[in-house]
Image (cartoon, rainbow, N blue to C red; front, side, top):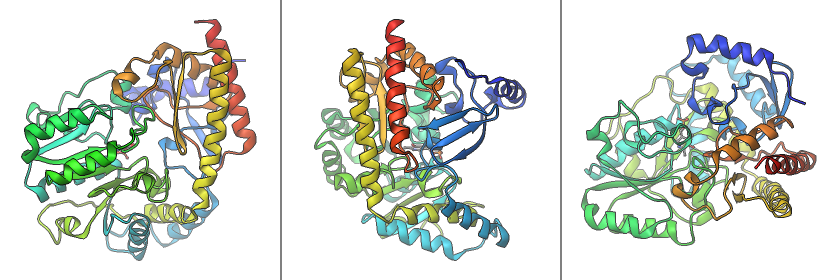
Length: 433
Ligand SMILES: *Cc1c(COP(=O)(O)O)cnc(C)c1O
Protein backbone atom coordinates (compact mmCIF):
# COMPACT_ATOMS: atom_id res chain seq x y z
CA UNK A 1 0.00 0.00 0.00
CA UNK A 2 2.96 2.30 -0.56
CA UNK A 3 1.73 5.72 -1.50
CA UNK A 4 2.79 6.96 -4.92
CA UNK A 5 4.94 10.07 -4.61
CA UNK A 6 6.34 10.38 -8.13
CA UNK A 7 5.71 14.11 -8.48
CA UNK A 8 7.34 14.78 -5.11
CA UNK A 9 10.39 12.73 -6.11
CA UNK A 10 10.68 14.72 -9.33
CA UNK A 11 10.17 18.06 -7.61
CA UNK A 12 12.87 17.16 -5.10
CA UNK A 13 15.41 16.30 -7.83
CA UNK A 14 14.68 19.65 -9.46
CA UNK A 15 14.97 21.52 -6.14
CA UNK A 16 18.29 19.86 -5.28
CA UNK A 17 19.88 21.47 -8.33
CA UNK A 18 19.21 25.01 -7.14
CA UNK A 19 18.65 24.78 -3.36
CA UNK A 20 21.21 23.23 -0.97
CA UNK A 21 19.81 19.81 -0.10
CA UNK A 22 16.63 20.75 -1.94
CA UNK A 23 15.20 22.39 1.19
CA UNK A 24 15.23 25.86 2.71
CA UNK A 25 15.57 24.52 6.26
CA UNK A 26 17.41 21.32 7.23
CA UNK A 27 14.57 20.13 9.49
CA UNK A 28 12.53 19.60 6.32
CA UNK A 29 14.99 17.12 4.87
CA UNK A 30 13.95 13.52 5.45
CA UNK A 31 17.55 12.32 5.79
CA UNK A 32 17.07 10.84 9.28
CA UNK A 33 14.23 8.67 7.97
CA UNK A 34 16.00 7.86 4.69
CA UNK A 35 13.26 9.23 2.46
CA UNK A 36 12.76 12.13 0.10
CA UNK A 37 10.80 15.08 1.50
CA UNK A 38 7.16 15.34 0.50
CA UNK A 39 6.18 18.41 -1.50
CA UNK A 40 2.99 20.03 -0.28
CA UNK A 41 0.23 21.45 -2.43
CA UNK A 42 -2.10 22.80 0.27
CA UNK A 43 -3.32 22.45 3.83
CA UNK A 44 -6.86 22.45 5.20
CA UNK A 45 -7.74 22.03 8.87
CA UNK A 46 -5.92 18.98 10.27
CA UNK A 47 -4.84 17.77 6.82
CA UNK A 48 -2.01 18.34 4.36
CA UNK A 49 -2.26 17.44 0.67
CA UNK A 50 0.86 16.65 -1.33
CA UNK A 51 1.44 17.39 -5.03
CA UNK A 52 0.67 13.75 -5.92
CA UNK A 53 -2.79 14.10 -4.40
CA UNK A 54 -2.11 12.15 -1.19
CA UNK A 55 -3.78 13.31 2.00
CA UNK A 56 -2.08 13.30 5.42
CA UNK A 57 -3.28 13.84 8.94
CA UNK A 58 -0.75 16.35 10.24
CA UNK A 59 1.19 16.54 13.52
CA UNK A 60 3.86 18.97 12.32
CA UNK A 61 1.70 22.11 12.29
CA UNK A 62 4.34 23.84 10.15
CA UNK A 63 6.63 23.15 13.14
CA UNK A 64 4.28 24.79 15.61
CA UNK A 65 2.46 27.86 14.28
CA UNK A 66 -0.71 26.22 13.00
CA UNK A 67 -2.43 25.71 16.34
CA UNK A 68 -5.80 26.48 14.67
CA UNK A 69 -5.12 24.04 11.84
CA UNK A 70 -4.19 24.94 8.27
CA UNK A 71 -5.83 27.80 6.45
CA UNK A 72 -8.16 28.97 9.22
CA UNK A 73 -10.93 31.27 7.87
CA UNK A 74 -10.36 33.93 10.57
CA UNK A 75 -6.76 34.39 9.43
CA UNK A 76 -7.63 34.17 5.71
CA UNK A 77 -10.15 36.97 6.10
CA UNK A 78 -7.69 39.36 7.77
CA UNK A 79 -4.96 38.60 5.24
CA UNK A 80 -7.27 39.28 2.30
CA UNK A 81 -8.32 42.58 3.82
CA UNK A 82 -4.72 43.67 4.42
CA UNK A 83 -3.66 42.52 0.94
CA UNK A 84 -5.96 45.11 -0.59
CA UNK A 85 -4.38 47.88 1.50
CA UNK A 86 -0.78 46.90 0.84
CA UNK A 87 1.80 44.41 2.08
CA UNK A 88 4.49 46.66 3.55
CA UNK A 89 5.05 50.32 4.34
CA UNK A 90 8.11 50.45 6.59
CA UNK A 91 6.17 52.81 8.82
CA UNK A 92 4.15 52.15 11.98
CA UNK A 93 0.68 50.62 11.69
CA UNK A 94 -1.93 50.31 14.45
CA UNK A 95 -2.04 46.53 14.26
CA UNK A 96 1.51 46.39 15.71
CA UNK A 97 0.35 48.08 18.92
CA UNK A 98 -2.72 45.88 19.06
CA UNK A 99 -0.73 42.64 18.93
CA UNK A 100 1.85 43.95 21.45
CA UNK A 101 -1.00 44.83 23.84
CA UNK A 102 -2.42 41.34 23.50
CA UNK A 103 0.95 39.70 24.19
CA UNK A 104 1.48 41.92 27.26
CA UNK A 105 -2.03 40.98 28.36
CA UNK A 106 -1.32 37.22 28.05
CA UNK A 107 2.11 37.48 29.76
CA UNK A 108 2.26 39.27 33.14
CA UNK A 109 6.08 39.43 32.84
CA UNK A 110 5.82 41.44 29.61
CA UNK A 111 5.43 45.23 29.48
CA UNK A 112 6.96 45.85 26.06
CA UNK A 113 7.43 43.84 22.88
CA UNK A 114 9.76 44.24 19.91
CA UNK A 115 8.73 42.45 16.72
CA UNK A 116 11.27 40.74 14.46
CA UNK A 117 10.96 38.27 11.58
CA UNK A 118 11.89 34.87 13.01
CA UNK A 119 12.55 32.99 16.21
CA UNK A 120 16.26 33.08 15.43
CA UNK A 121 16.22 36.86 15.28
CA UNK A 122 14.23 37.00 18.52
CA UNK A 123 16.75 34.95 20.53
CA UNK A 124 19.78 36.65 18.93
CA UNK A 125 18.35 40.04 19.85
CA UNK A 126 17.39 38.93 23.37
CA UNK A 127 20.93 37.68 23.95
CA UNK A 128 22.41 40.95 22.72
CA UNK A 129 20.02 42.87 24.96
CA UNK A 130 20.89 40.69 27.96
CA UNK A 131 24.59 41.29 27.37
CA UNK A 132 24.09 45.01 26.84
CA UNK A 133 21.83 45.39 29.85
CA UNK A 134 24.00 43.43 32.30
CA UNK A 135 27.37 44.45 30.83
CA UNK A 136 28.39 40.76 30.93
CA UNK A 137 29.43 38.38 28.13
CA UNK A 138 28.67 34.80 29.10
CA UNK A 139 25.48 32.95 28.24
CA UNK A 140 24.35 29.70 29.81
CA UNK A 141 22.35 27.44 27.54
CA UNK A 142 20.98 23.98 28.15
CA UNK A 143 22.15 20.97 26.23
CA UNK A 144 19.76 19.93 23.44
CA UNK A 145 17.75 23.17 23.53
CA UNK A 146 17.50 24.91 20.17
CA UNK A 147 17.20 28.67 19.94
CA UNK A 148 17.53 29.25 16.21
CA UNK A 149 20.83 29.43 14.36
CA UNK A 150 22.45 32.54 15.88
CA UNK A 151 26.19 32.10 16.50
CA UNK A 152 26.09 32.28 20.31
CA UNK A 153 23.37 29.67 20.52
CA UNK A 154 24.52 27.12 17.97
CA UNK A 155 26.39 25.09 20.54
CA UNK A 156 25.08 21.62 21.52
CA UNK A 157 21.76 22.55 19.96
CA UNK A 158 18.73 20.37 19.31
CA UNK A 159 16.41 20.06 16.29
CA UNK A 160 18.18 19.85 12.91
CA UNK A 161 21.62 20.19 14.52
CA UNK A 162 20.95 17.12 16.66
CA UNK A 163 19.27 15.24 13.80
CA UNK A 164 22.36 15.71 11.66
CA UNK A 165 24.51 14.63 14.62
CA UNK A 166 26.76 17.69 14.64
CA UNK A 167 28.05 19.41 17.79
CA UNK A 168 28.26 22.95 16.55
CA UNK A 169 28.85 24.50 13.17
CA UNK A 170 31.86 25.57 11.12
CA UNK A 171 31.63 29.33 10.79
CA UNK A 172 30.88 29.88 14.47
CA UNK A 173 34.19 31.16 15.79
CA UNK A 174 35.93 29.75 18.87
CA UNK A 175 35.78 33.14 20.54
CA UNK A 176 32.00 33.31 20.24
CA UNK A 177 31.38 29.67 21.17
CA UNK A 178 33.52 29.96 24.29
CA UNK A 179 31.21 32.60 25.75
CA UNK A 180 28.41 30.02 25.73
CA UNK A 181 28.41 27.58 28.63
CA UNK A 182 26.34 24.45 28.11
CA UNK A 183 24.79 22.52 31.00
CA UNK A 184 22.41 19.52 30.91
CA UNK A 185 18.67 20.18 31.13
CA UNK A 186 16.98 19.24 34.42
CA UNK A 187 20.33 19.24 36.25
CA UNK A 188 20.45 21.69 39.17
CA UNK A 189 23.92 20.76 40.38
CA UNK A 190 25.43 21.47 36.96
CA UNK A 191 23.86 24.93 36.91
CA UNK A 192 24.95 25.55 40.47
CA UNK A 193 28.57 24.71 39.64
CA UNK A 194 28.60 27.03 36.64
CA UNK A 195 27.23 29.90 38.72
CA UNK A 196 29.72 29.20 41.49
CA UNK A 197 32.55 29.54 38.98
CA UNK A 198 31.30 32.24 36.57
CA UNK A 199 28.41 33.90 38.47
CA UNK A 200 29.54 37.50 37.97
CA UNK A 201 30.24 37.00 34.23
CA UNK A 202 26.91 35.45 33.26
CA UNK A 203 24.55 37.76 31.37
CA UNK A 204 21.72 35.26 31.04
CA UNK A 205 20.45 31.72 31.17
CA UNK A 206 18.39 30.86 28.10
CA UNK A 207 16.26 27.75 27.83
CA UNK A 208 13.18 26.11 26.36
CA UNK A 209 11.16 25.85 29.59
CA UNK A 210 9.54 22.72 28.17
CA UNK A 211 11.82 21.35 25.48
CA UNK A 212 10.55 20.61 22.01
CA UNK A 213 13.70 20.63 19.94
CA UNK A 214 15.15 17.47 21.45
CA UNK A 215 11.67 16.03 21.64
CA UNK A 216 9.26 16.98 24.39
CA UNK A 217 10.70 16.96 27.90
CA UNK A 218 9.04 18.62 30.89
CA UNK A 219 11.03 20.37 33.60
CA UNK A 220 11.40 18.28 36.76
CA UNK A 221 9.46 19.75 39.71
CA UNK A 222 11.34 22.74 41.12
CA UNK A 223 13.83 23.00 38.25
CA UNK A 224 12.47 26.19 36.68
CA UNK A 225 12.02 27.71 40.14
CA UNK A 226 15.65 26.90 40.85
CA UNK A 227 16.84 28.64 37.67
CA UNK A 228 14.67 31.65 38.52
CA UNK A 229 16.25 31.83 41.95
CA UNK A 230 19.89 31.36 40.96
CA UNK A 231 19.72 33.89 38.09
CA UNK A 232 18.12 36.47 40.38
CA UNK A 233 20.72 35.86 43.07
CA UNK A 234 23.55 36.37 40.56
CA UNK A 235 21.88 39.31 38.80
CA UNK A 236 21.77 37.43 35.53
CA UNK A 237 18.68 37.49 33.33
CA UNK A 238 16.45 34.47 32.87
CA UNK A 239 15.35 34.14 29.25
CA UNK A 240 12.50 31.78 28.47
CA UNK A 241 12.62 30.90 24.80
CA UNK A 242 8.91 30.43 24.22
CA UNK A 243 9.12 30.43 20.42
CA UNK A 244 7.50 26.98 20.55
CA UNK A 245 5.70 26.91 23.91
CA UNK A 246 4.38 30.48 23.80
CA UNK A 247 0.58 30.63 23.35
CA UNK A 248 0.65 26.83 22.95
CA UNK A 249 0.92 25.41 26.48
CA UNK A 250 -1.32 28.17 27.80
CA UNK A 251 -2.21 31.72 26.72
CA UNK A 252 0.77 32.81 28.77
CA UNK A 253 2.89 29.85 27.65
CA UNK A 254 5.15 27.89 30.00
CA UNK A 255 5.33 30.93 32.28
CA UNK A 256 1.63 30.66 33.02
CA UNK A 257 1.71 26.85 33.21
CA UNK A 258 4.54 26.77 35.77
CA UNK A 259 3.92 30.14 37.44
CA UNK A 260 7.36 31.59 36.68
CA UNK A 261 8.13 35.07 35.36
CA UNK A 262 11.11 35.32 33.03
CA UNK A 263 13.07 38.55 32.58
CA UNK A 264 12.97 38.23 28.81
CA UNK A 265 10.73 36.05 26.67
CA UNK A 266 11.19 35.17 23.04
CA UNK A 267 8.36 34.29 20.70
CA UNK A 268 7.80 33.07 17.17
CA UNK A 269 5.74 30.40 15.43
CA UNK A 270 2.17 30.95 16.78
CA UNK A 271 2.50 34.76 17.05
CA UNK A 272 2.90 34.88 13.28
CA UNK A 273 -0.11 32.64 12.57
CA UNK A 274 1.87 30.99 9.78
CA UNK A 275 3.68 34.13 8.61
CA UNK A 276 7.38 34.79 9.38
CA UNK A 277 7.36 36.53 12.77
CA UNK A 278 9.41 36.57 15.94
CA UNK A 279 9.42 38.82 18.99
CA UNK A 280 11.29 39.47 22.18
CA UNK A 281 9.66 40.99 25.18
CA UNK A 282 10.05 41.76 28.84
CA UNK A 283 9.85 44.33 31.61
CA UNK A 284 9.90 47.99 30.66
CA UNK A 285 13.30 48.80 32.18
CA UNK A 286 15.01 46.04 30.21
CA UNK A 287 13.15 46.57 26.93
CA UNK A 288 13.81 50.31 27.06
CA UNK A 289 17.48 49.44 26.72
CA UNK A 290 16.74 48.73 23.03
CA UNK A 291 17.16 51.35 20.28
CA UNK A 292 15.85 53.97 19.60
CA UNK A 293 15.32 54.71 23.33
CA UNK A 294 18.26 52.63 24.57
CA UNK A 295 21.81 51.90 23.44
CA UNK A 296 21.40 48.28 22.26
CA UNK A 297 20.92 48.42 18.50
CA UNK A 298 18.40 46.20 16.74
CA UNK A 299 16.37 46.93 13.63
CA UNK A 300 14.39 45.32 10.78
CA UNK A 301 13.13 46.51 7.39
CA UNK A 302 10.11 44.21 7.46
CA UNK A 303 9.69 43.96 11.25
CA UNK A 304 6.05 44.30 12.29
CA UNK A 305 5.01 43.69 8.70
CA UNK A 306 1.25 44.32 8.45
CA UNK A 307 0.42 41.03 6.69
CA UNK A 308 2.33 39.08 9.33
CA UNK A 309 0.80 41.10 12.17
CA UNK A 310 -2.74 40.52 10.86
CA UNK A 311 -2.18 36.76 10.68
CA UNK A 312 -0.64 36.73 14.15
CA UNK A 313 -3.31 38.90 15.71
CA UNK A 314 -6.15 36.87 14.19
CA UNK A 315 -4.55 33.71 15.61
CA UNK A 316 -3.93 35.15 19.08
CA UNK A 317 -7.50 36.46 19.25
CA UNK A 318 -8.76 32.90 18.86
CA UNK A 319 -6.58 31.93 21.83
CA UNK A 320 -8.12 34.59 24.10
CA UNK A 321 -10.74 32.05 25.03
CA UNK A 322 -9.13 29.87 27.69
CA UNK A 323 -11.40 26.97 26.71
CA UNK A 324 -9.05 26.42 23.79
CA UNK A 325 -6.44 25.04 26.18
CA UNK A 326 -8.76 22.62 27.95
CA UNK A 327 -9.81 21.40 24.52
CA UNK A 328 -6.17 20.87 23.49
CA UNK A 329 -5.46 19.14 26.81
CA UNK A 330 -8.41 16.77 26.28
CA UNK A 331 -7.15 15.89 22.81
CA UNK A 332 -3.66 15.36 24.23
CA UNK A 333 -4.98 13.14 27.03
CA UNK A 334 -6.90 10.99 24.58
CA UNK A 335 -3.89 10.49 22.34
CA UNK A 336 -1.62 9.81 25.31
CA UNK A 337 -3.97 7.18 26.74
CA UNK A 338 -4.23 5.49 23.35
CA UNK A 339 -0.49 5.49 22.64
CA UNK A 340 0.36 4.26 26.15
CA UNK A 341 -2.18 1.45 25.87
CA UNK A 342 -0.64 0.40 22.55
CA UNK A 343 2.89 0.44 24.00
CA UNK A 344 1.78 -1.65 26.94
CA UNK A 345 -0.27 -4.13 24.94
CA UNK A 346 2.58 -4.76 22.51
CA UNK A 347 5.26 -4.63 25.20
CA UNK A 348 7.05 -2.13 22.95
CA UNK A 349 10.24 -0.44 24.24
CA UNK A 350 9.03 3.17 23.89
CA UNK A 351 8.46 6.12 26.21
CA UNK A 352 5.79 8.76 25.74
CA UNK A 353 6.23 12.38 26.92
CA UNK A 354 3.55 15.04 26.64
CA UNK A 355 2.92 18.54 27.91
CA UNK A 356 -0.41 19.97 26.70
CA UNK A 357 -0.53 19.85 22.91
CA UNK A 358 3.16 18.89 22.49
CA UNK A 359 4.30 15.28 22.59
CA UNK A 360 7.09 12.92 21.55
CA UNK A 361 7.20 9.14 21.36
CA UNK A 362 10.76 8.19 22.29
CA UNK A 363 12.25 4.93 21.09
CA UNK A 364 13.67 3.73 24.37
CA UNK A 365 11.93 2.01 27.26
CA UNK A 366 13.24 4.20 30.09
CA UNK A 367 12.22 7.69 31.14
CA UNK A 368 13.56 10.56 29.01
CA UNK A 369 14.57 13.64 31.02
CA UNK A 370 17.56 15.16 29.18
CA UNK A 371 19.51 15.26 25.92
CA UNK A 372 21.71 12.26 26.73
CA UNK A 373 18.57 10.19 27.23
CA UNK A 374 17.26 11.27 23.82
CA UNK A 375 20.59 10.44 22.21
CA UNK A 376 20.29 6.87 23.49
CA UNK A 377 17.01 6.37 21.59
CA UNK A 378 16.99 3.86 18.75
CA UNK A 379 17.01 6.06 15.64
CA UNK A 380 16.52 3.13 13.26
CA UNK A 381 13.31 2.20 15.07
CA UNK A 382 12.16 5.80 14.85
CA UNK A 383 12.80 5.81 11.09
CA UNK A 384 10.85 2.57 10.66
CA UNK A 385 8.00 3.99 12.74
CA UNK A 386 7.94 7.22 10.75
CA UNK A 387 7.65 5.25 7.50
CA UNK A 388 4.93 2.98 8.87
CA UNK A 389 2.96 6.06 9.96
CA UNK A 390 3.36 7.99 6.72
CA UNK A 391 2.18 4.99 4.74
CA UNK A 392 -1.00 5.12 6.82
CA UNK A 393 -1.37 8.81 5.97
CA UNK A 394 -0.06 10.26 9.25
CA UNK A 395 2.50 13.05 8.79
CA UNK A 396 4.95 13.34 11.71
CA UNK A 397 8.12 15.39 12.14
CA UNK A 398 10.83 13.33 10.38
CA UNK A 399 13.18 13.20 13.38
CA UNK A 400 13.29 11.78 16.90
CA UNK A 401 14.59 15.19 18.04
CA UNK A 402 11.32 17.05 17.48
CA UNK A 403 7.96 17.74 19.06
CA UNK A 404 4.65 16.61 17.57
CA UNK A 405 1.85 19.16 17.75
CA UNK A 406 -1.86 18.77 18.32
CA UNK A 407 -3.97 21.42 16.64
CA UNK A 408 -7.52 22.48 17.39
CA UNK A 409 -8.53 21.16 13.97
CA UNK A 410 -8.03 17.50 14.99
CA UNK A 411 -11.35 15.72 15.49
CA UNK A 412 -12.10 12.76 17.77
CA UNK A 413 -12.09 10.52 14.68
CA UNK A 414 -8.72 11.91 13.61
CA UNK A 415 -7.29 11.06 17.02
CA UNK A 416 -8.77 7.56 16.94
CA UNK A 417 -7.35 7.04 13.47
CA UNK A 418 -3.93 8.13 14.76
CA UNK A 419 -4.09 5.79 17.75
CA UNK A 420 -4.92 2.80 15.58
CA UNK A 421 -2.23 3.78 13.05
CA UNK A 422 0.21 3.96 15.97
CA UNK A 423 -0.80 0.43 17.00
CA UNK A 424 -0.34 -0.92 13.48
CA UNK A 425 3.01 0.82 13.06
CA UNK A 426 4.42 -0.41 16.37
CA UNK A 427 3.16 -3.93 15.66
CA UNK A 428 4.77 -3.90 12.22
CA UNK A 429 8.18 -2.73 13.40
CA UNK A 430 8.08 -5.03 16.39
CA UNK A 431 7.85 -7.97 14.01
CA UNK A 432 10.99 -6.62 12.28
CA UNK A 433 12.91 -5.92 15.54
C1 LIG B 1 11.70 27.25 16.11
C2 LIG B 1 12.45 27.72 17.27
C3 LIG B 1 13.39 28.76 17.18
C4 LIG B 1 13.81 29.35 15.85
O1 LIG B 1 12.77 30.01 15.21
P1 LIG B 1 12.93 30.29 13.62
O2 LIG B 1 11.70 31.06 13.30
O3 LIG B 1 13.00 28.94 12.98
O4 LIG B 1 14.15 31.05 13.43
C5 LIG B 1 13.96 29.24 18.33
N1 LIG B 1 13.65 28.73 19.52
C6 LIG B 1 12.78 27.72 19.67
C7 LIG B 1 12.46 27.20 21.02
C8 LIG B 1 12.16 27.18 18.55
O5 LIG B 1 11.32 26.17 18.70
